[in-house]
Image 1 (tube, rainbow, N blue to C red):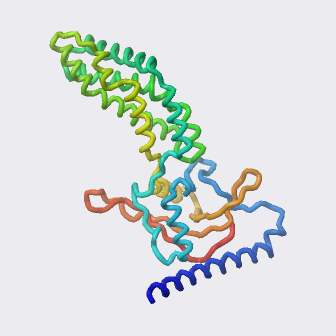
Image 2: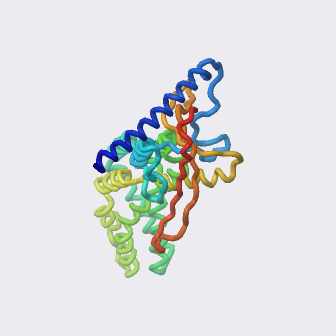
Image 3: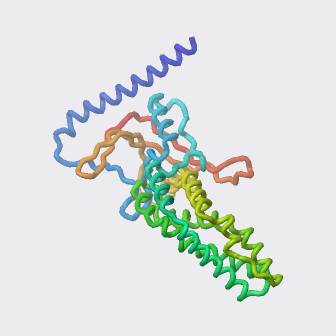
Amino acid sequence: MNKVSGENQNSKHGLTFIREVVKYFMDFLETDFHKRRNPKRTVKFRNDSNLLIGVDLSKYPKFKKLVYEAIHQGFHKSTISRIQRGVYRANIPADLLQLTKLQCQRLTEQQTDKLLDIITEGIIKATLDKKEYDRILITALESTQTIIKSELVHPFFMFLEKPLQNLSLGDENTVYLMEDELANIFCKSLEDKIADVVRLFIIGEKPDTKRELTSVFNLEEVKHNIDEFFESYQVKDLYAELYEIYRNKNILDKQDTYLYFYDITFQKTKYPIFYIPFNIDKETDLPPSNGTSSCVRLAIKKEGVSDG
């Protein structure tokens, strides 16, 4: 009996939604089809001041699925009412990931060999300029990170910035942070070997620095680290984007937030077909150690479906 009751309830919500859609088209037929101007409401993610004012939910398929479930249920269940930090993340799209793999395959033994020569020179120079172990090690590691970032990581990322921008997944700051993270991964893999080499220099020995580094920094390891980095990297967090919109809303005057679903494109401009107003509120910002996590709260205004 409970199952039948639940199905009837879902059927009611579905009929309510269909009724709203039909009403919208009736209104649309009676008015907008006879107007010769474009709708004022358009789909935009940033305003003229480059402030974030919208989020493309196609980046977050898990959350997008919940949105459609909520619409089907008439928002009677709070499936999307609270969004916590780190729960809904956007990975690098498969097509772009494939591009990074192709780029990675182009790396050669000659490139990694040349890079090791430059890193080795930097380490040897650090041992000549400094006397104390700690200072030599810090200088050698900093030199290694700078070389890896400029000679390997940055050239690799040069083709990524524009695709990430086009997909609304990041900008030059995102790419800069990604470069730092990947460079840190390489430096971490070299850290112990560099420390061993520096110790040998301190006691007067002359180790084969390049040979020592090759055991942990070779073409196979470089390709593996790059592939693993991009496969696991998450470029966006829905919480962070909604919180940015929440802050920007406080800066901008007379701004409301809406959930758009379905759109139509005319002369390179997107127009929403349906929209539902909602509020974004900051619920808490207590540190995770207190047993809570930061989240934003979405309050859907159940006023039915509106036209764009």
